[in-house]
Amino acid sequence: MSGLTARVRTAEGWPVADAVLTVTDMTGRQLARALADDTGSVRTDPLPPGVHTAVLTAVGFEPMAQIANISAAGAGALGELVLTPVATAISTPPPGPWTIDPAHSTVIATARHLGIASIKARFAEVSGRLDIAEPFERSTGYAEIKAAGIDTGIAMRDNHLRSPEFLDVDTYPVISFTGNGLRRTGSDTWVMPGELALHGQRRPVELDLTYGGFGADPWGGVRAAFHAETQLHRNDFAIDYNAVVRAGVAAIGTTVKIELDIEVVQGEQQPAL
Image (cartoon, rainbow, N blue to C red; front, side, top):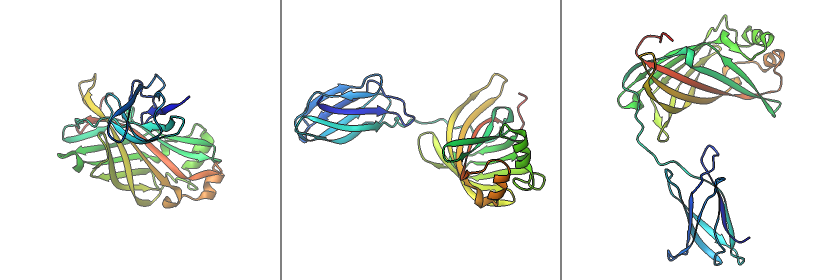
């Protein structure tokens, strides 16, 4: 079949149904208009050969313009197109201290295994605070994780990871991050540069933050939510590869992905629940 085709997606991979594909020639005259179906696929009727302009629009998304090269058969393909949500004003948390709620916060470390699978470790004990400033970009944060709380689901491996051959939790019981300031990267995303202390080493690290909003909770408090990610290299923190092998996780990658889902409660005190 001829015509111009495209697949319309969000950055998360979801199809954008009812996106409108409009094609014009170089004088601005409209040549075709078509709607995307529930799968995000869209196709126009056959088009005149040549170079045209294709414009994608959808409610809640920024418009996108592309050059469309149409063959002598009246066909062309734009491939997969990712639409960006319209930037909206995000209401950031009120200034002041916010305390991490350990019961509703998680830290996950993921490493590749044999290049085809993943090993995940959860750290069960996290605490700390955010000091929200005005403007928001001047905010600072501190988080600490009890190294002994590592949990991969296998007790023997966890005990070995806690030993002096690996994390050495008796000597270095706390993993900490101190963040200083924020750089906006999107409508609800920021980067927080800071310093990570792990296994006796201190290194600069940047957290990619996504802000989930804030609001009242059922227990009379006010909460805000953040998702944070970064990548670490084991060699930067003097973690010996041979110790990793002896711990039973041989052939894992040297890069470890860290993900934090954090809830903070307004005020200085730990929440009751």
